[in-house]
Image (cartoon, rainbow, N blue to C red):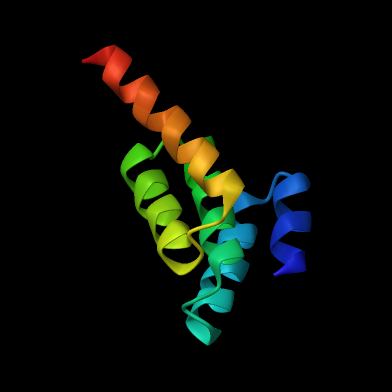
Length: 82
């Protein structure tokens, strides 16, 4: 999964996403990999996927502060648009 983060930083989000997908395939309860997928989807502004990944990360680890923070931020952003 470390390659995924490096790939993202090099502007290769598709390769990063592929690495996160592989990490989740090996361990579906990898909250960090779900969070990292949410980051890629955030960059793509695919809000439905972002919400799903952040919720999944929080379901696995209810104390995942970053996931809770970004999910809350996104929900506030969505409510402002309504």
